Image (tube, rainbow, N blue to C red; front, side, top):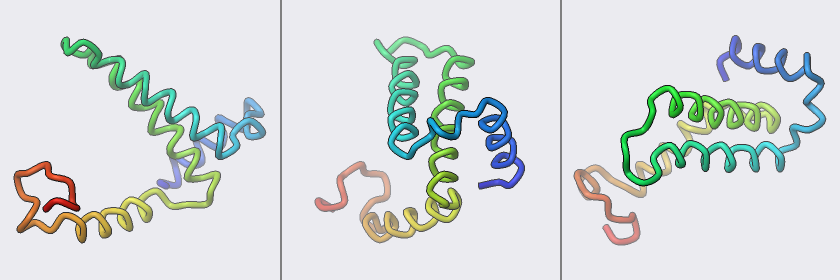
Length: 105
């Protein structure tokens, strides 16, 4: 995680003494809850309110960063590792321009 963001998040949590509530399970639940709120912004197919989408996305990202920090994981590293695995599942020559699941390519 970006050191400045990590320190800012840690300070925010510490100032409020919230670390004891930030178990991996609770953080994962919070990610799911906030992701639902983000999805709600797109419910019914109407145009989404940009500022609300921005705020909900920030909530999802914040909880993801807090969970990664709690687990001692570097977000950039785990994203790159997963991207490498996904590249193998979806080779460009088979996956370009299609949304077919990897096991059907």
